[in-house]
Picture 1 (tube, rainbow over the protein chains, first blue to last red):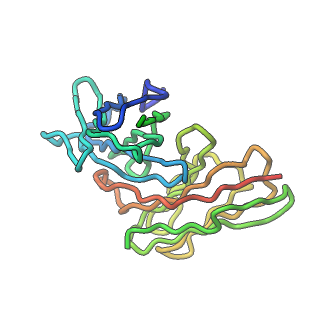
Picture 2 (cartoon, one colour; picture 1 turned 90 degrees about the vertical axis):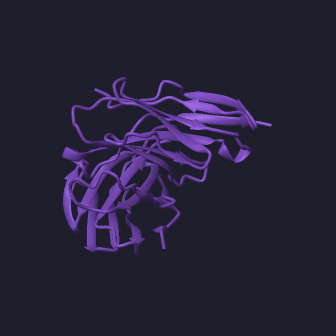
Length: 115
Length: 116
């Protein structure tokens, strides 16, 4: 069974608008971490934001925020004030404490920012 | 220094060749990873080294042979590859140890491998 689901293969957003990228996950582990990575066409995976399963508040990092709904097992990424440089693949990933070394990635969402 | 450096950036090899991919980090991380990524797909885990010992091998064919000579270096030796092995190979590192789920992985820029 797929552990991470990203239902939006592609998304378009107008420059300076906000956009939400969806991520749902499946785990029976009580302790886990959720990560978002950006991958431009150059190939490097760039870490954006982290949310722990026991964190009470939603994570924020600059223009990035994570809408964490634990009961729904969702961890959506919100990008505010989109920029042309935000055009890239975005991957949601999970790390579980009982399988602590591995990062499992979702299928990704390709975001295109329009001028 | 928060970099993971991979060499080479591009590699073309024949099916009878032997080559190696190299990865280096100086962040003191004790977990190092090899991922394989096909076009338009997410990275797929191949190997994990924890404290220089192989801890996870995701049923990777033996034509891929990992090596971790020390805590800063990770190699992937390639031999008798097939054209379907052409992909982006990503190295990553993170703080090691069970329970450290709150630490992100740092990735290198990858090696784009083409097998002809």
